[in-house]
Image 1 (tube, one colour):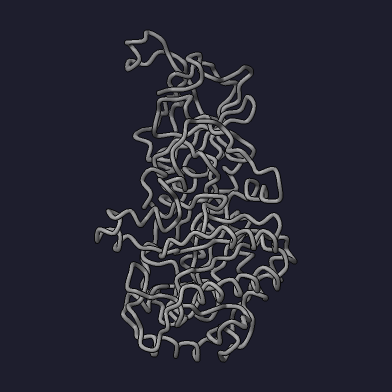
Image 2 (cartoon, rainbow, N blue to C red):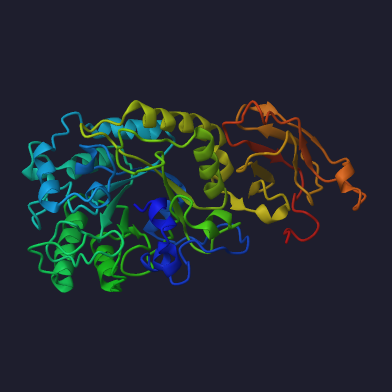
Length: 455
């Protein structure tokens, strides 16, 4: 995954941030009018719209030193030295069931796993390169173990695959972003590399049962070839594919907070899955990691889910295969919050245009409206101007407590000489580390009289 430090160096100015994802003008997560529910596919890919919240897992040789998943590139490690890490790969405590237990505690419903990251090390029994988990002291097919556990528990499994490859001699490492400089002994040949890539993708799509999603990353050459995704779809009918591969794919992938348009959009014009890691510096295991606060992650999750997007939250297991207590604790606390508020984005539509208050997002299911405070509330009240329909009741999902409401004119509404729905006495300080979600139940159509949208 990409890091903010590289963007700060000016890479964004050249436009590669969009182009390497094949976005063609930020189509990945572009802003759209509030149009309610994103149109579904009407086929096997629609599992995506039910699952909503997933676990991303970055794991590989880089966990051994615990620096960063891009250790080879960022720490300028010679390839000849980096490959020696394979002889230390022995995650004897790896238990996929423990990963899935934690996933369920977090309220997540699917998994996306890094089969091959930029370093080229493969976590399955590939025949295309010896640089894989079978040729290590561990000698086991990690992906098979995870896939079998997912199939037993009916957990949708998605596979991450990096197009950049710092190990394969045919990949044209030219020193572009997220590439090594040319390496001694390399024989750059893009067509031969694509043959290798196709062979690996075929293995992934034929040897591990049903695969629900394919998550490409880092198409640095910006190569277009829709036939590759077509092959995946032929091998795995019903699979959903992201937009970072060789065509626009099925869904956009705003990462961290890099995509400001996605962060600020009131809705999306195509299926979208935001991705974020619990660690501020890395996606893989980092021994000296700095972690996001629960508050920051909860509000980020609430922001995307309320707007109809999915959310993929990442942890990096340690070299022994276990997920350390610090990130595991973050997932458990998020799960405790998520289970209380998840009804706000279950079979709801985004109606955020019903209010001019940009500190909240609104979702709706029939005559029930959910107020999602995805930003720091400035006080203990939330105005929903121009909504005027009085609710039958208001409930704070975080605690189950009743919320006091009013439609009386507030002094700040003097210009209109009328009142609007206002939620009062909220425990904004007490719940300062959570995203508050309030359920409003009405006995009539709650849409504002102005036509249902604000400017």
